[in-house]
Image (tube, rainbow, N blue to C red; front, side):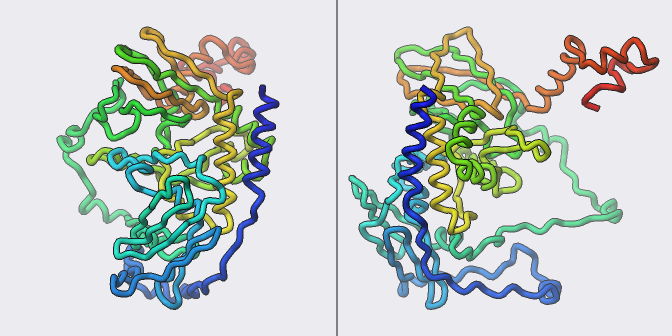
Length: 422
């Protein structure tokens, strides 16, 4: 079965990587200022030159070809957007959940040769009618396009915040917050339960199918262990739980296409959780982290971070990497959805499932009826700390065994000074 899955992936990869990227003529980039001129500038980092306003009487010029859409802001400034990038970032109600702020569009069903039937400048933004079976129409506000222009970047760094440095004089007015303000928020570290009532702005609180993903891609430090427990499911069917070993899928990807693997190990992906009006989560740095994380010393794969629904705008890609990156995640999705990778299990009340969120992706099939789940997160450091303590007690390392009785004062306060992890 694995061999057949790999043959399918290889065939798809050949189809996906057949066309080469055609670049339009390059736009002259502004010359960088000298260090002296930067030092003389007194405005903070956030006060970059504003982008020119769009005059609705003189709309941008737009054109398209089989690969890209070009937008001319003025006679000297143009932006180019790949067709697949534009289609992937459509935010109409069919493609983007307006409440949860999550992607509904299946990125991997976008044809690699997607192209516009028509592009039109409107006062609201760029209107694109696609050559799909339903002639889908997308609208992209001008301000959004300009803020997310990547070929060339027009506003990269505009939102960069300047750090406030401090020294001993901070004692004169140290930052402080009242205890009551701190304790007024919702407590963390508890069990949560959910059902399909959209009580929270997340597609987990719906009945729709969820593809294989890891949780907390919008956190700087995603949870380590995740617990699921089905409390009840009455008056309906479906809701089968999906589990995928991300390390296994990554090994297939690496064998099939090392270059695609490299892209997923190097290109950071921004993410967000923005369905709640009182919360807006993004990782730090906001550019995010690669899908595949590695030990900086051994280069071993240590973490998988993947949730296509929570992926933010990919405005930081180099123009020459856009189609390559989409080809890479398309192949990654084929590895994840291969029958050889997917493990489907129908949970029953009374049975809890715990997965390593840094390795195992989870999802579910669509369902109807009342389905109520509960779950919990455990930090990866808390889990590894407990595991290390239990290992000391019940499976000590060879050095600990050899020194515990023969080397004086080797165990102090319950822990060997020769512990292999110290």
